[in-house]
Image (cartoon, rainbow, N blue to C red):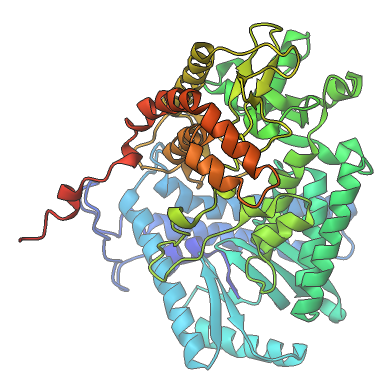
Length: 583
């Protein structure tokens, strides 16, 4: 149910005008009282009434069957212009730079709007109806009936009950939905029943309507939405979605999806060289390259781009803006230079929208959807929480080293003999470990590596990790934004990009730094090495190696612990913890 021209009608209904409402100081936030019924009609209500009457006259002319098609189009444009002018009256009152700016009048109008919506909900509930959603000028009512005729009768009864309360305000039936998926405010999808029993899908505010999602993402979202609104059993819907996502994953990775389906479009809000954060904006980087090559890119232009990656490049370790390419650049490039980053599209273009669509559905979750798309499900598992919102996770002492150090960087060493680079693998992994009874030996040239050289290389890598942490880069957790910046907002973790509702988190956290240091320490911890080798065929060999190289392991471990001991996560101040206790 929808109120017709709510704000213009409120201005008329309550006679809200400069000449009728007693206004306080502009800085006063108090809502003024509407004028009494005996106050003469003000200028604004009279002007709006004139516009409404003229629109009715024009709409009546549109019913003339003898009018030509061109004349009907002219009438339609005119009635739309009159409607827009009437509706803009409230906007003029609330816009600070309007010559008719009057904040108290705008506040009174919106206050009455909220009051009317609340009274409408209470009235519907008194008629034993469930109001499932309300927003600005409309209410969504659950009729609890399955026949169209019964739903129409209920809407007529509610319309009559509401309209009897007001002189000029009118509520009317805007549409009947057979099924509704309501995600958030102004974000929903529904099966709308048209005249004659025909149905159509109405979508408002969902990701598939946004330009920054590619055609592939919108196609997948459309299928998932159709399944959710199909009316089938939940088990069938979930199974169909999982199978479809697995098929999409296979098609994407095998190159069966056409290039045009990966193109993302974004409009330039200003000239590309005027962006202060151009390095973090993919479409701006593409626009700058277009201009450098003699092309045109200015404010208002829509820039197409595709996320690409070079062979062997990990998308998570490079900025999004650096990987954005114009479609023409991709077509001219060879596979050895770069190609479409399929993993990025599955993780950031396909997964987030369907995750939000499937959130109310039982039988699936983010990790399961990621698994169907061929992504690592462990990266998308969500910890459970209490009613208060606090989350629980496994105690650190109960986490295995394999899980704890899963994302840790390896210790890379360079041989001074052949200048080759290799990873210092854990000692118990005998097939790849470079530690021999005589000490660390290069597998390529059999050159023995000196302990001071390895200590220096280890210290350089530790300092690199510490430096990365102190750079303080943050990344927005909203996949559609993914802003990477070192700027901090005044609202804590909220993303600093205007309009984004995501939260900014550190790109490299103190936990990751601490675990990285612990990983380096673990490589040279003789007790942990022996424990890890228990049950292995190399157990005896590993024991002999640790005893033979004990001095080397102690020196390397001391190099790591020099930094580990400075880490705040290693120390607990018991005096602070128990300061409230009196002995």
